[in-house]
Each structure stands twice: as structure tokens, then as C-alpha cells.
Length: 160
Image 1 (tube, rainbow, N blue to C red):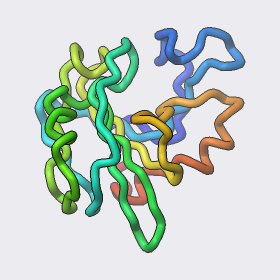
Image 2: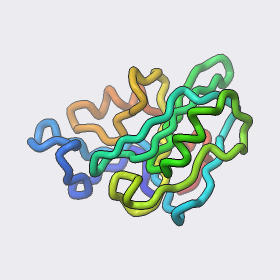
Image 3: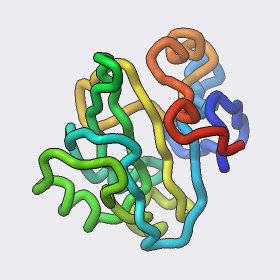
Image 4: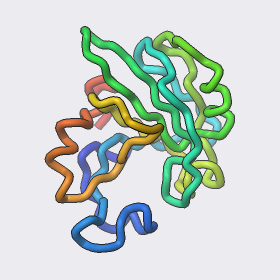
């Protein structure tokens, strides 16, 4: 498990994470859960598909699905990253989903941004302007990001 709010100074070495010290993104704002390629990923709470996209740049999410949920009158968005291309294709045809439904499957390194197979799961209290969320932030943006991105253990439970 890769932890929420974890500083990872040597892990992110592609250009999408910044090249200078001031803007370098190295603090992880989701939870990573390792799993074999093809493992199913299930929706944690009833909701709907907000968007689905492929972010194919090296180091990015690959197959990405963002869902929208209303929990106790509060809207939150959940990003599921590093999924297979078939997950994204399927999600584009879905509308409302029940808790426990399959949202997608873990992608391989060719389709998930070049990472070892895992799920990146992230929560936000702000609707994303595009089908993406900053899964890793810089030190200068860290405190502000903690107001937007929630610790996913509030829905996943105490997994670490």
C-alpha cells in the first residue's frame, strides 16, 4: 500500500512531476493498492460516472475513471487510476452505479503510465475541471491540497 500524504522524494522522475526543486511534485495525495493485472476494482459507494479518459504519458494514470458521489448531502469525487483501457471504454457507457459494482480492472504497465500494476485511489471535495486530479503535489501546494483531497481511508477503512 502506498500511503496518503506520503512524501516520496525519489519516486517521481518523469517530466510531468516537475523539473526544478520549487515545483517538483513528490507528496502523494491518494492511496496506492498493489494488485495483479486484471484484478477487478469495485465502487465503494453508490454514484455515477463523472468522466473516463486515457492519460498515456509516461508516469501518468493511464486508464482513469472519476466517479461522483453524494454522501450525507456532500458531493465528493473519486479517481480510480492505472486501470486498463477496457475499463475506460466500458465506463463511458455506464450511468448510475451501485456500491460493490465493478468499476474497472487493473491495467498493465503498457496501458497504466508505466507503473507496476496497482490502483491509485483518490478523493476530492472539488469537482475536477477535466478528467484528472493531481495525485502528487509539490511542497508549496501541499497545505492547500490537504483542503481539497481527503484521506481515502474515510471510505476504505484503516488499511494501513
